[in-house]
Length: 264
Image 1 (spheres, rainbow, N blue to C red):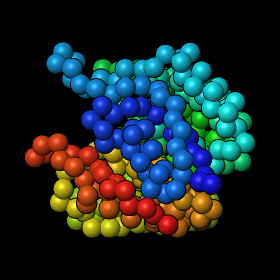
Image 2 (image 1 turned 90 degrees about the horizontal axis):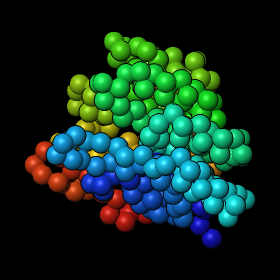
Image 3 (image 1 turned 45 degrees about the vertical axis):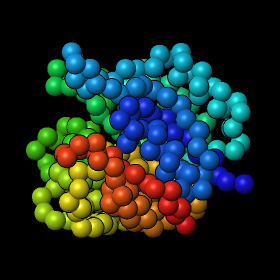
Image 4 (image 1 turned 180 degrees about the vertical axis):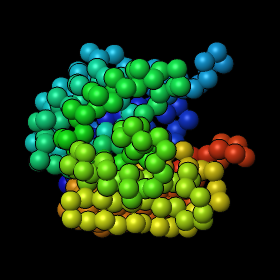
């Protein structure tokens, strides 16, 4: 029987990120995937990129259904885009029942527009109730800065160290394409470990969904009882492969693709 994992996150209409990529990643790691949908990301002529939240009641009902049917069978929880503070509170309450029992990987997607600064601050305050329940958190550079209120700090190791000290959980800060140079750099800091992971950057724009894939692959490796260090290394390798095989949307954008490659 395969392991059973849950992804809580948004639907990416372009197909590269969100729960679609999470479920593909689960299956590549021999994990049967469940999902609770929080939102739908799309683009309109009037508003550009927007996130349409699922109602709080529907999110509660999805999680109640999963808890009722799979409580004793879940092997991992991966958390992605939560559309508002109310959703964060709902997910935190759900995760309390699984805290310390199974890996919970939090990928704190902060998809706020420049005009939504107060909403973003309220959201981050609410997120502080969820973060301590996570086994590991995987923000990118910008998300790490926002969580710390350190907009000028760009040193990944220092950001990861400050986040670990602040929240007392392991942290992986993803550098991605935001870091100059020809190396894709991620940094892990836990209570006893500090490690810089590097791989050559790929000259491809097929990166939509890379962060989701990384967090999902990390969750799967942890559910397979691998060490945190091993799990981060394997997740990074998996994302490299997914970008390398990625699907172009046009000459400048594209999605990761996992091409059915099974990961041991």
